[in-house]
Image 1 (spheres, rainbow, N blue to C red):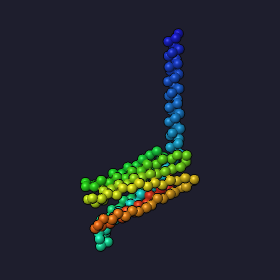
Image 2 (image 1 turned 45 degrees about the vertical axis):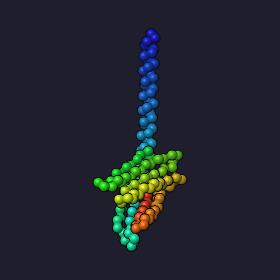
Image 3 (image 1 turned 60 degrees about the vertical axis):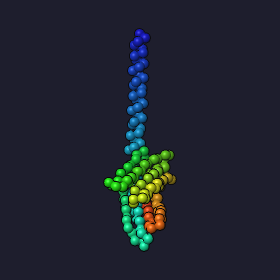
Image 4 (image 1 turned 90 degrees about the vertical axis):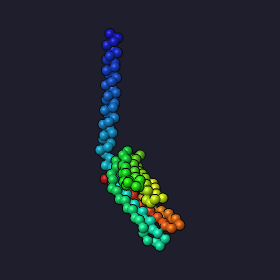
Length: 154
C-alpha cells in the first residue's frame, strides 16, 4: 500500500511539473507573438584623408536588421586582411525597448574604429535615432567616422 501511494505521488508530482513547464512556455510563446520587435538600420561611414584633405580611403557599412526582445544579431564582415564586426541586442524591460550596438572595423594598417551606441524607446515612442561622429588625427592623415542607428516598431 505504501509503495502504491509513493508511486501515485511521484506521478502527480511529475504531472504538476510538466504542467508548469508547459504553461510557462505557453506564456513565453504568447509574449513573443505580442512583440513584433523593432526594425533597425545601422549606417556607418569611415573616411581617411591625407594632409592635403583628399579622401584616400572610404568605408561604408549599412545593415538593416530586425530584433525581438531578448534577441541578438551579429554580422562578421571581415575580409582576408581586416577584422570587422557588428553586434546588436534588444532588451525590453517594463515596456521600454533598448537596442544596443557595437561596431568594430580594422580600417587601416595601424588604425581601427570601435564604437557603441543605443536607441531607447519609452513612453509609447514608435521610433528613435542615435547618431554621432568622431575625428582622429595623426601627423599625416585624419579619419572621420559618422554613424546613425535608426529603429522603428515593426
